[in-house]
Length: 305
Image (cartoon, rainbow, N blue to C red; front, side, top):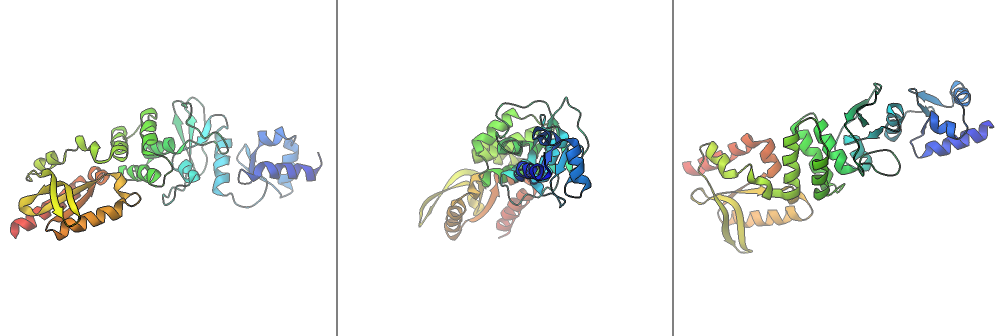
């Protein structure tokens, strides 16, 4: 094969992979190890690891790093996963500079700079995107990212952002949570996914009244009605004698026009005489003590008045 045709074939192959190709892919085009060495020695291509060749000499973009991670780990067993798969699917605002790869657990995998390889027990049918970069679907990637996160706060954040940015639906996230078995924070992830999928209806185990009693606070009334110029408003919990109400927001309260509607509703209630504290249901899991300190301050201030 002449050099011009070889380079044209290699460039065409690598174009959709960030400028990289595997040695086996190049071999399938008739490009031998000798040909690859000739291009590398000539300063036109560059070697990355044992299996990956860049058909240029510049730095690797993130998509190329992902393909290289798959090639080096094993094209048949590896897939981009977790936060990296979500970023590839379009997730914005979540920072994780490592490339996360899942690999079937009964294979040996090398250590790669900038790559975190996570062993998984098995691949369930339908977990992977069918075309392009081998990667898990957003709902699976979100659950895995939550298991691999550095903290509960980070785990909750990636789950919320995945649904808020419409990379998947609450129902698909809940289905993936039932299938994907991680090693860490299983109960926490199950609870947060339930919060995202079902909102305040998932509060059974939290039981706001029980949390009040545990802290020596008076138990509030539930589903209290307030008549405002805009009509009847139902407050989640309220203490009439303290003119204090708490609204417990499900994850859906941050989507679309829900924020505007909640603000209008809260303003009406506030102007009618109640002080309103807002607590999001996931925040109640993550920062229970801090939110209840605010509730206690609200009750104490009116007591003092």
